[in-house]
Image (cartoon, rainbow, N blue to C red; front, side, top):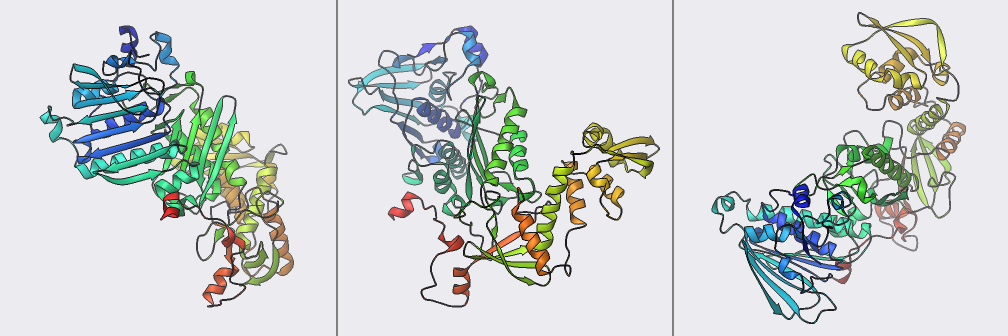
Amino acid sequence: MIRVLPPEVARLIAAGEVVSRPLDVVRELVDNALDAGASRIEIEVEGGGLSLVRVRDNGGGIGADSVELAAVRHATSKLEPVVGAVERVTTLGFRGEALWAAAQAGELHLITRPAGQVGASEVWAQGEDVRVGRAAAPAGTAVTVRGLFSRLPARLRTQAAPAAEVREITALVGRYVLHHPGLHWRLSVDGDPKLTHAPADHRGAVASVYGPLNANRVLKVESAGNGLGVLGVVSRPELTRVRRDRMHFSVNGRPILAPPELEKAVIDGYAELLPAGAAPLCVLDITVAPGDHNPNVHPAKQVVALADLGGVAARVRGAVAAALAQHPLARAAPALIAPPEPSESPRNGSFPELTLVGIYQELYLLAQGEGDLWVVDAHAAHERALYERLTRELLTAPPVELPEPELLHLSAQQRAALHERHEELRGWGLEIEDFGAGLARLRTLPAALAALHIPRLHEQIVEGALGGGPDPRRDVLANLACAPALKAGMLDHGRGELVLAALADCEHPWACPHGRPTTLRLSERDLAHAFGRRGVRDVARGRDAEKKVVPKETQRS
């Protein structure tokens, strides 16, 4: 039932400007379709949305007994008419302003029928003029808005060009496809289909929106517990962008403009697998209790307030890290082709059994495994193993107090970092005291680091701890792992086998602490093609045997 909200509730949710451009009409009508439980949603746009916006769905429809309230302001079926209901929003729409605002800005025409009702209802609304009639129509709802801002010439003159608005509408519908992949979607612009999607999982949605090549390089993310769920996909480390425009989040089904904390949580989940300044593709659906989020902080409901943003970010970071740890993440050479799932369970869950077959330039290990040729950077691999060993040992023993505290000269930036990080550094055994006049005293070191025989040990530790990186512990350990790692000219067959064994035992074997890949992978098929070989051995094996994701539309064509 649609009911008019009392004034005290309406005051809590009044959004002001709801429809300022065609994009807003599309968003509001799609939200209504999703709230109605639709499994098929079709969007039509003409003239950049100024001439026509139409959204059809096969959802629950509006009953004839309340349809006359559909275009009345603050009349809604999605919120109980009590003040406390505003704190427990469970639908994408809840204000009851969308149809009313569309009727203020243009001509609204609505045809709707619940599945159990004989005959459909029809509504015409423009401004405050509302008429209701009867019609014949299938179950569901079709809403058409024509002539947006035709009665508001000043507003009409400030609208974006049709092509620009279509670009924004297409991006918006793509977001809905990514976060609601189990539905049928179709977007048509001036009669031409621009985006179609058949029900699939998140990977299939990525294929529909960004193409099969991107879909081949995403990994499933799934985490649930304590009333908080994280579900979706993240890209493999080789699929990155400089911009964060393909990092998508939803909260309880609502696509949102993600707070920086959530974007950072995803990037932190990659740790060293992601180069500095790079951003992955991700589609993550976050579920929280209705009372733990507030969608009423933005007119378009694109920004939500989370009661425990830090806890949500931590769960997202853990879910991304867990997903990456479960898959082989070797970079392919020469083409960036995603390697297959291992046929047997390796020691760390993703790294294969490799057999050393040779050494190149006294630095690179040549090995075979899973039917492919692997090239391992011995320095990067050894550095990874040393980094993880130092990480494990860092807190296993109490810190070592230096017999004579070392006096250090600090820059202004380092002094600022010391004041900010003092307690954090002391927590893992590194105590540096501000001595005034640009000086500081190094008093204690973690036992695992004090035992290292590395030139300029204390200086390197302080530089890393007080540097500009966001994670001082990682910076310190990464720098200290680099110094003793095997260099060119130090490698022989025995050491090579030890490096392979140590790499296989790493928790994250695919990249060194600085983000460089440790392994590259080349299939026999690539070699055969490069040599022009054809014959019985020219078959898919190793990483070439992985199945590719192809959208259904492509399969039919």
